[in-house]
Figure (spheres, rainbow, N blue to C red):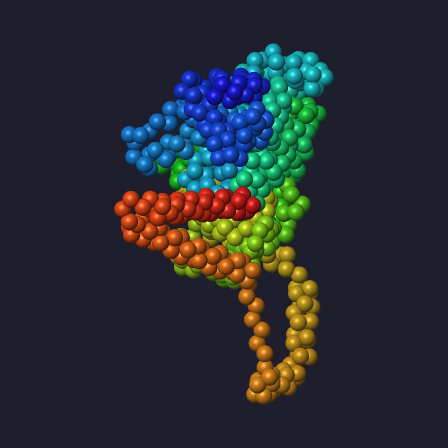
Length: 609
């Protein structure tokens, strides 16, 4: 316990400012207990000898234990003792505390939580919905440090760049904080300034995760989840968020593609006053969309337009715009939550990139085609087409049984797609499909996962604005339009024509070949070859069953024989009686050995998987 506590202290020194402020004695005790159990269990089972304890604490196992211990410590400090609550309330509160713990642990943990929020194949829907509420509200930096960073990055005194610069930020998130300002030409802008030292803090967090990743080899699901790839994705995502120059390029492209599309407005960037840690953009006037969502008043807003009608109009517009981003541009806002949307007069919608996450992936095009094909197939309730489209957006990461996959997918679709189109919840369909893919060793591509996450976020906004709107009915026409646009009629006709030509050439040969087959069977010379799949595994299991049966019979005979010897031994003749007791002992030891061997064999198989 002392060694564990010492290692815990050493490991958490770089993170002390973050952890110590949110832990208490109860939390630390629970965390250390968990870490001690994680380390001592392998010693108790003989997998690790006591003399290797220090090396174990330094190993990936130690890092994984530390990581789990820290999370448990934070949750314990928050008081998750909910014994008196009902099970439903307890689960909901625990999920909420987990989300709050991720928020307090900083940007890296928030990013991990956001990625967990789309993994409905691993976590429950209630848990993933709670994680989608993750917000990164952090303390603000003092103005002196902000001023020093801006002047260093832009290589000019603050007064030579801005006419005015608010000392207090109006928003602060995990990566940066935003200040209202005015340029020398009088233009009102927003200055987004990166928190000093945030890059090194994120790197420390990532190194903690990186050292714990090898422990995933002990988990069977690691083949499907691919934690190394997920960590790599988190690292790339955070590095991109830290590089404001890259964000500037994406935001300018987003502005070019979307500004003034119908009622959509996007802020214009100011590249002359931006750098890797500072970005300046046009100030977008308007009201946060959250206020409209929370408004229950039905009073008139403009002319004859009520809040209810306004919500319907905006929800329709948001869906159409997102579909345009995905299917036409292949360049979409990956986090369209209400905090990133402003409502202006005359129904203008502003996409504000104060914490913008824009995704552009050159590999997205084939997945867009398959996604559109999937949506159309769901709309037309074509199970086989859905199966083919889903398989096309996955990669195989283990043994795959196509018949089992098709059966499970068909079983789900037959139950769900019998509903009227208006009642089909597209997000639930996608979530269940992801679970079925996971269970069949199919891994959905990261581009599609990010798209599903963004779609789920948007669906939550639409549900708040207009619960009666069928998202599916609006999405399907866009998917169909995109699919038809990508359809090359000339190529399709050529391919179909070649298939028909090949079939026509083979047609005259069919009668003769059929007669030959019938004649062969009529003469008794026909052979039918059957292939037994996984016959090696089947024979191994059969042999193991026979061996266990034989051993069981032998042990039964040994116990019965020993019992007869003990019962029939003459009084005072200890030799025969001792022989019976010896038989009992051999039987007991054999049974114990078989139990241990069986458990160990199962453990080895589980570890190998």
